[in-house]
Image (cartoon, rainbow, N blue to C red; front, top):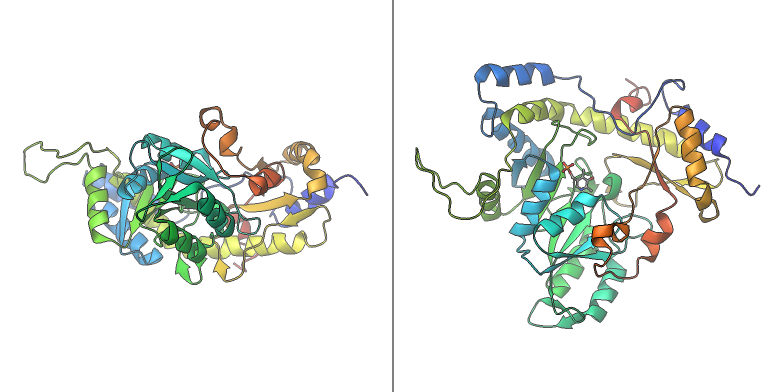
Length: 394
Ligand SMILES: *Cc1c(COP(=O)(O)O)cnc(C)c1O
């Protein structure tokens, strides 16, 4: 059989869903805990803005859950990432290595610093940055200098590498850390999709200098909008708090600011919702894992398509489940998406690769053969935590 059996794909997905005749988005929030109670408590207290007990509590819970020494809550994940890059020392005219396969916010955060995104390729298995090919590339491109990497072609300093944990699958952090150390490059993690993901038993997001989380409406834990900076470094955490509160110097009544700061602190009302969501996170993870297991089994016998499974020694959060069409079927992606949408399954193709976007077309890049081989074949399928409930056994 030459063509892709799109009906078989749709049926395998439907097999794992509670009701085949409903519409299923990719990721819907699950608001079934104390959200109303905590938000009401927040409103009743009058502390609705950028300080209050829920912000402190949310940060403490994030630090405890991830094992990071510090968490600083922000208005969204992009703002967290912007500050992460600044804290890692990224300045105007630096270059920042960043995946071609990612959501546009990763790249935008680099651009907000006045730095130049330099796109790197991903690994076929983890979907994160490929450490082996990156190392080889940097050996070619970097002028060996005094402990930093200078791009021979552009003369710019390559200051940082952003590693993104795609769909919650941890990238190969040990190897990537080694590459960064060897080349004098700071490691920053975009862990926006990866709350609840573990690499060799360690929660991701604080292996580098700093890391960013997101609590957007489609993430595993949502605060409506929100993000956080994770770090094990007390001084960087202090700077993150300072920069995210317009660099205001503490004083009972004076307006004093000692640098250009940002209004990036998470409001208490969002943190109230976050505290309620954190209480449910273990359940979300259990349900999402059970849903992923159902998909994995259902796709075992469907030809022409592969369910993306986690790599060895890691445990992802199963944030977004993904299918990979066989190479010969890449031309049938859109027909499959259309059929699925007609059936109420709101599947989505993976993001456009970053070097295809008009504002980033001229940015430096390595050969992106893996990302380019995947771009027309990766498809996300419904992954909301609620869908896994019946598979997790209640
Ligand atoms: C969601 C996301 C972000 C941005 O987070 P926001 O909270 O939406 O600003 C950044 N990077 C990746 C990979 C994401 O998925």
